[in-house]
Amino acid sequence: MRPLPLILTMAAVLVYGCHGPVATEQPASDPAGTNFQGEVRILSGDTAFGPCGSLAVFRLTGPGLDSIAHRYTYLNTVPGQWIKTWLSGHYAPDPAGGPDSLLIAERYMHMDVAVTCPPVPDRRMAGNYVADPAQHADARTTRLLLLPNGDATSFTSSNTMHTEVDGHWGINKDGQLIFVEYDGKYSFAFAQEQGRLVRVLAGNARGAAYVREGPPVRLQGAFGRTARWLAEVATAQGHPLRAEDVRPAMPLDSLFPDAASQAALRASAAEQLNMDEHQLSTTWTKAENVQDVTMLMRAHSRAER
Image (cartoon, rainbow, N blue to C red; front, side):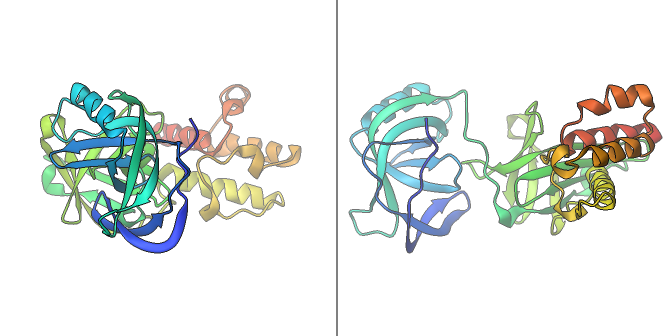
């Protein structure tokens, strides 16, 4: 199914997003039969559709709504539950003359409670967050780094340990901030309350509250150490690189494009990561991008402690 198209006009209106009305641009009417995927929520007198990849939420109507509502009633287990839905339809102005656009559902296609739209980063929420110390019985410090592009890292430190977990973050259709571990093995949810993030535990119990300390600083922890090292070696080999420009998904051969620079990086890895020849010939050769090297740096840092 092809990605959701959002054809925009220049007339700015309000559509309802996860934080209430959000300023955006009104989508023009798309050709009939456009395929959409998103999440549907049906409440009394209110049927909404949130397209995947967007924070916007549109009122849903049209001839396909009966089939959608029938399937939704069968599948939903929690009042107001958002359910992943595929449909065919098009955007249209509000016939009542209101400021909001509608999504006209022409044909129901599919609905699945087992999957959700990936959470969407909201640049307004980016920052460095620190857990309220009163939430911990020990001397542990927990921080959450949320970068504008959706990258994220969780840091936990105490007198005896330090851990870092990379991942991605975004806002789901319920307005919760979701942290998803890099490999998708697990995720955490946070409610937004008066500028703070409050961890949502099982059974909707409240966990630690995180307070925003300031803007996000990317070059922290193992990633910061890795980025500075790679930038130094690349620049010395005639491939100018700033640590601030390094990103986790960058392939190493894009930063070190020739045999000489790759050999220099390998030699430097022996010192920076304390690798012997066997490790260089096995573990190091499996590193393909900056994230892989960051993981090696993180393992080396743990071994140093």
